Amino acid sequence: MPALIIVILAPILLILFNLLTLAFCSQKEIPTEAQPFFFRMINICVTLLLISAYVENVFTH
Image 1 (cartoon, helix red, strand yellow):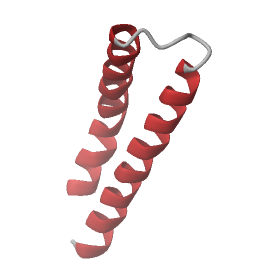
Image 2 (spheres, rainbow, N blue to C red):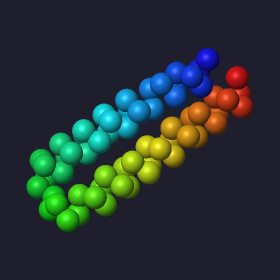
Image 3 (cartoon, rainbow, N blue to C red):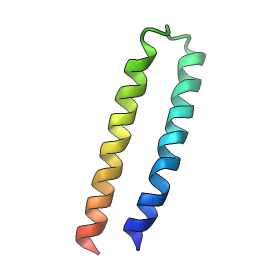
Image 4 (cartoon, rainbow, N blue to C red):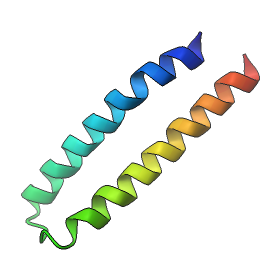
C-alpha cells in the first residue's frame, strides 16, 4: 500500500519541484541557457530519491 501512494504522489512531487525550480530561476535571474541544467539536475535528484523511497518501501513492507 505505501508503494502505491508513492507511485501516485511521484508525478505531483515532480511537478511541484519543477514549479519551485522555475520560481528560483526567475527570482535569481538565471540565464535561459543555464536553466535546462538546473531543471535536469533537480529532476534527476528527485527521481533518484523517489525511486529509492519506492524500493525501500517495497522491500521492507
